[in-house]
Amino acid sequence: MKNKVSVLFVCLGNICRSPTAHGVLRAKIHAAGLAGRIQVDSAGTGDWHLGAAPDRRARATTKFHGISIDDLRARQVTVADLATTDYVLAMDNENLADLQSLAIANELSTERISLFTDWCYEASRYPPGVPDPYAGGPEGFDQVFALVNDGTDALIKVLQSRLG
Image (cartoon, rainbow, N blue to C red):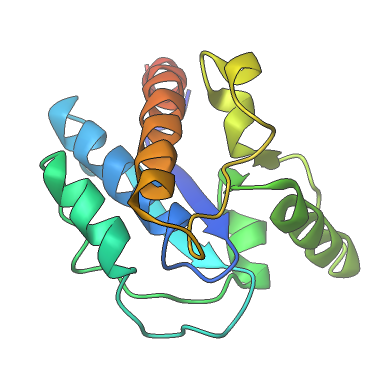
C-alpha cells in the first residue's frame, strides 16, 4: 500500500480526451474524499497546443456534467512523467506506442503505461482506445465523456484499494 499515487492521462494534443479524463477523475477523487492522496494530470504526445485551454467542446461537455476543466492547460509529456507517474494511461494505441517508445529510448520500464480503455468496465463495448473527437461534432465529445466516465469509475476503485 502507498500513501499517494499518481495518474497521467495522455492523448495527442492534450486539449480533448486527456483533459476530459483529468477533470472527471479529479471530480471523482474529491467526491471519494481522496484529495491529496491521488495526483492527477494530463499531457499530450504532441506540442501543437502547448499552454492552450481544453477545446471549447470538451469544456462544454464536462460543464454539462457539472465538471469544470477551464483551469487546465495543454502540456507535452516528459521523460520525468514516465519515470515518476504510477499510472500512465494512453487514450489510444498510437499514443500508447509513442509513450512506450519514449520510455524504451530513455531506458525506462513500460510497466506503468497502459491503454485507458483497458480500465473500462465495459471495455468490449468500445473500440480499443478513446476516439479523437477533435475533427467531429459534439457527439464525439459525448462519446469521450461516456468512455472516460466508465474507465475512471473502475480506476478509482483500483486506486482506493491500493491506498488502503
